[in-house]
Image (cartoon, rainbow, N blue to C red; front, side):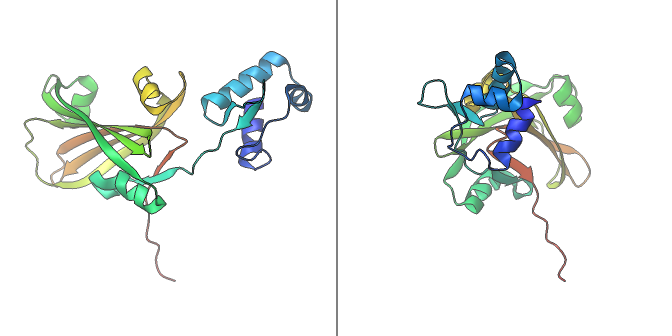
Length: 215
């Protein structure tokens, strides 16, 4: 796909951040394509945040993008602040709201509770500077019977952003989000918390820092 070729040119630095793309005629000749196909390809890259409109009429430029922050979920509730500190940027988690909501089928299955059980939903937004880069929803049963957190398991994936997520994260409609679903268990294996993250994939990476054996 032309979008893949253009993405690779950006990744390899042939089109560096802040640079103008060649004029349309040059792009059509380079990729040997048609105007509608080229428009679709550049539209995909604009949706991903790699391209933006330049001041010059009809021109596109490679977006100046900061390096993504590396989020280590093992840092717990302070994972975002720790990621910002490692990157030496100003960031915080902002509490948006707390509600009591009955668990739907998916949430109930994840937490091992009956459907309709009352749960506490805590919503926070991860912020860098003025930009909101991640939405976090923490779900806990109100009648929590488990002990202390002992282990956690998570699934990392991607999907199309909801309308609300796109508005919060500054994504175009149809844009993708990086997703994490993390369940925390006590030492008896009882689920304590379900945490769902939806992040701007251009601003956030998720992984672990692993200490390697000494050589």
